[in-house]
Amino acid sequence: MQQIRESFWRFFGPFFIAVRDLLMKVGLMHHHGRQEYHLGWLKAGMSVQDLDHLLASLGFKNHAAAWIDDDEILALRKLDGFRFQYHLRVYKDGEVKGHYEVTPEAGFWNHFLEWEMEPRRDEFLQMAGKFIEAR
Image 1: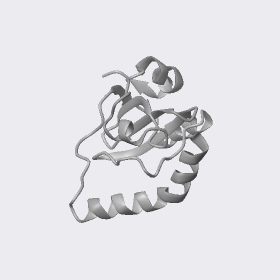
Image 2 (image 1 turned 180 degrees about the horizontal axis):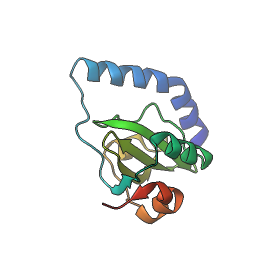
Image 3 (image 1 turned 30 degrees about the vertical axis):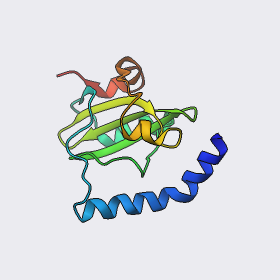
Image 4 (image 1 turned 60 degrees about the vertical axis):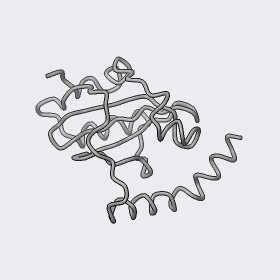
């Protein structure tokens, strides 16, 4: 079943992204605001690029099919097997948010409806805490 879902998303993923972007452009769909699960703020003296490099070294990658939050400047995910992922976002004002959730590939409706979503704050701070401060 996993191979079927992976093949489906490899084939239809670009189509899904194009349709989502078109619907957002014409105003039929919009993802308002920011995701939940505040982790902190980018530390003074740390750049988004530095955080991006650290997260890439930990296995985080861009996921083009993800929603784009208002004021988002970086969004990366790290797969935890096929079924779950860590998803971290950084915003223009330096706010950092992250959550753990089912991947859209493993459970599209659960992902879309934000079921099985958890904060996992301690795990995110273990991974990227040297770049994030509470304010």
